[in-house]
Length: 347
Image (cartoon, rainbow, N blue to C red; front, side, top):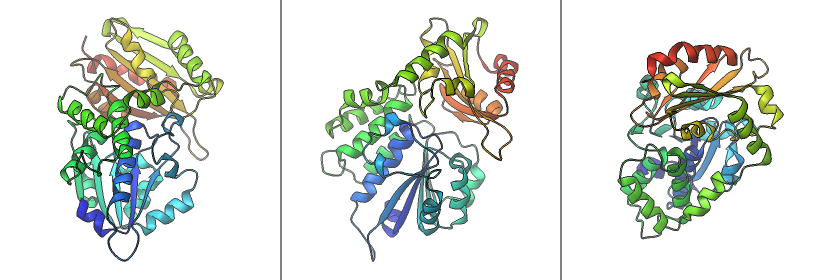
């Protein structure tokens, strides 16, 4: 991986639509690291992070976030960067559909490609045909964990100048957010050894937590209360909770990207609820006939939700934390949910 990077002059780092803390953390950690490498070749190595759409405001504090290019807002400039690239690095996704229109642009460029991901492979064919180097470990807690391990394997010394506070902070943010502040996908003791290294490098754990989880707007807090009081359904025989929010309801509370982050975890605080699902409607864009229903799944203990998410809702993820989507109405998504949950969930 290091050799591919050092041979490149124009590098583009991609991560998935609706970027979360792990997507942001893994891509920005690599961005900082690559910028810190010795320059080789005839000119200055250029590296850019491009995301398909806007990231949540509560991640805008992350070191380097102000340098990220957003494809939806500046597609022409991003298309030029993609066309000029001689190396692509894909983090926290393993299917080009997860980066929207950028996926087609990336595949049209025959530049070298590196993939770093921790999700189950849904489309191995495109990887074999298009990706030069794959670092895929579904056992990992996050893409940021894999990035840390890769950088450590490349000679990054936690006691030296290699692991800067900025890199460590980006990696810690992804570890923290993709494990629900270490409440799931975090049973491997090595994760905490990594956290110790990151803290030694200067990460302020409490400050990162505060920046991510304690920065609600008034509208977001009211939306959360409304969702829990008015929109949560309980299916007691399967210890299951469902929260649905349509586009009109989101507009009522001036929804911003990321305002539903963490909502899916809240029903699990109920003593006899072990599964939680949220559905959020995104209105159909001009020229698109159907709305997109974004779905999040969470569970506790040895109760998987990733198979359900994969086989029914075109998604996937970890055993206790997965995602999916449906194109159509919210009512159609709920009917699909109610027609299938008994097959996939333990009583």
